[in-house]
Length: 497
Image 1 (cartoon, rainbow, N blue to C red):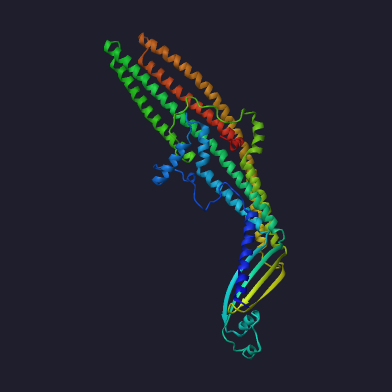
Image 2 (cartoon, one colour):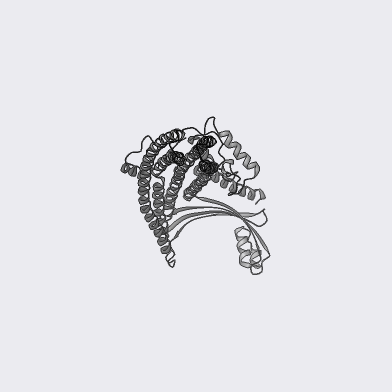
């Protein structure tokens, strides 16, 4: 045979293989937002800030992240919706969850591909002077002659180039392929629900960090106003001391109070800076140091809270964690069937097209088609062990599901009671502020009229300062409690900023 004949056979095999591969890619590929994982990591996946408790980014990457965050920042005060958008693009936990979804979809594509045939092109070269091998080589090449028969026990060294195109197709696997596919489908759904659960939690964490930041800003203002009040009281006392109507101890008492107010302001400012760092950490990227609103706008929660029993029922339908474990449980059930399939017979189709030549000039081709049946009669307990393992995993997830149901109900009740308590605390705190203001005005007037002591004045000022602090804390707690309640119900996973 001519050498072109052999080359054409090889080229045909390569073309058929490439064609089937492209067709399989077209039919089986799964498009995902996080595709092209191997190409390059997007800038949004590189998060962090240079500080003492985290490894610093390289300077170009750090500038890139900060520039991207600044360009995304709209005009006006910093809002919670803006932070949610920023976190959805940059938070590393969400990025990791998206890659887990992509991995689950790849596993699903692999499970689907198992139903389709496999086409393999191979090229082998062998050389031997073994009588049996040399005989088989020449026989396969259709080159055996009577002259070779005379030297069958002492043949010359013989070359063999073997080109093979093989196709295999499973016909029956005892349910292993269908169960594996169903398990992969449920696994993909579980990964998507895990992403939703992380988003639900992240939005609540963002809300808490945002309201804590506003709380810290307001506490700085309270401490500044308190410090200015103490300075005004000091001016009054010093004037009275120079006039001879106050003693030195009154001045010293006010100065001690002034030092306490200054110390409180230092702590408040430090907490304010720390609140920005916490917000950066939750978002996953540096947050633009924009102006904060005087009063935060209504958060993008649902219109109403509702009764606690209604919230519990809603949570059972909406919490992504519950949906995730249901999908995991379904996948585990199908994996039990995958393990049990090891006890059943299997059948498959095998077809070969072979070309043998010794010098690339002469040779012969042949084909083989067969059906293979197999039934494992004894595996020394391997399949039984796999079944027991799969059943144990199913039982573990079943118990975890029951525990999660109890935890979700407790989470709802705890969050609801915390929200009710925070609402009442804010009402009481506002009343206390009004009463403390009225008391301070009265004591200041009495002190100017020399009918009140310096101790009463200091006590009234401290009481107002602490009442205002409690008011700011209560206001922040109410916002945080509402966000925690929305998270417990599972509503935050669906928020579109």
